[in-house]
Image: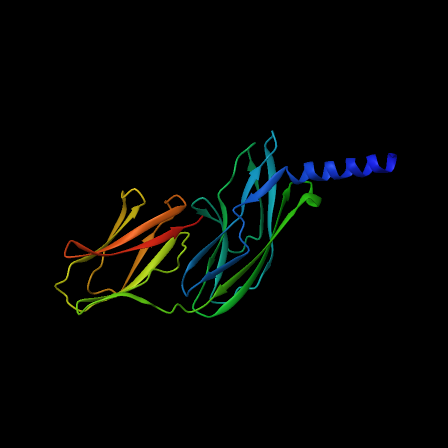
Amino acid sequence: MNRLLLLVGFFCCAAGQAQNFELVERQDAYSAGFNQLVRIPLKIKNNTDKAQFYIVRKTKSDLLENQKGYFCLDSKCLESTVNEFSKKVEPGEVINLYYTVESGMLQATNNFKFEVFPKGFPAEQIEHNVLLSVEEHSPRSVYQTRDITINDVYPNPVQDQASIDYKIHNEALKAKIVVHNILGRAMAEYELPSNDTRVKMLVDDFAPGVYFYTVYLNNSGVLTRKIIVRK
């Protein structure tokens, strides 16, 4: 009986420690095209009733020479040489911490390993292994006339920035893209100049969810497609 009580007590303590903090929005695998920014969430949530300092450590990374990786907290990023740092997290707070990867111009498979633990308690660490696959994007046409060719948005789902490749064959054409939410509210608008072939849509300020983009030619909507934002 005493042995059983000890075992029950041990597992209860272990469960309590495991709930002291967590990494929310974890994802183990990502894919990207060339010259893309990939944000790997390392969002720490403090489940205790006291402020805690947490150690964040990158223990594995096999980036190529044409790639770059660095930690970012909100919009502030650290130097790429920083592999470990500490951050104070208030009770119930979730910090917007990411490891950002510049995917580069070569096909690659990158492996990362991160460790997070309360300062002074390395035995309580959470390990997070991540796989990133970088491949050349193969454009897929979704709208084509004698005036314009438009390829599908990529990547989709998107975290920070998505791109649409296009080609205007008629320089007199006025083209633009409007991004709107599911209620129809316009969130962003981008002109498509005839002397360019790619438009970049910034969604880092968007809340996660489903959005739509509509292509307008001479102020007439000709195409609407879905885009998913994930954080």
